[in-house]
Image (cartoon, rainbow, N blue to C red; front, side, top):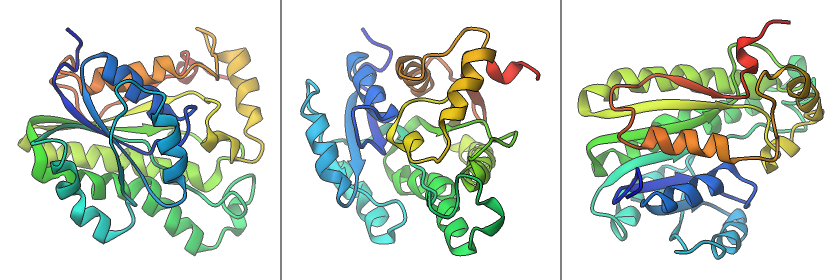
Length: 256
């Protein structure tokens, strides 16, 4: 019996088979979970294509976390597959690579900053609250971050947005905890995802991790990160909330 046996999980933000969310779906299903995946717009066709590789193939629903109508209808869409929801994975982030990343921090217009924070941080609240009517007596929300307690080269306003996400997760833990909902984040090292490829100069991260991570780091291996997400969705962390679990080969614990 797997650690998610019989649990109903929504994984929001799967685009490619190189997405962290995709590997989460694979492992969650192997551990016994029933999974629904979401994406929106033109990316839906890409998501549908990669989901065909999975057995069973999880249902795909449309969800733009910045669209109030999509959020309002989410319980109805999920209700077509589940009578309750045990967990939600928030694997969603965006910053304009032309204006908000790659060293353009000092000149980024607020319109792009605001949109990045909306998609990358505020949406954690939007998604959790949209799912709340379906939450089981005990439920788990897990988000993805890239440790924003420090500044990183080229990461710029995405780093700020991730810092907002980390604070948002702590407040969600505070306010939803009394209702049995845990909220935690996984802070992964740099992985070769479509999101990383959109960051100008992101190859610098591989050099940093390659020389400093005590356990070493394989940027193509999504499994350690996905396993941490699945563990936090399970009942094995019943009293853990507001936490940020590092899956980065130990780099966060090292100095210069």
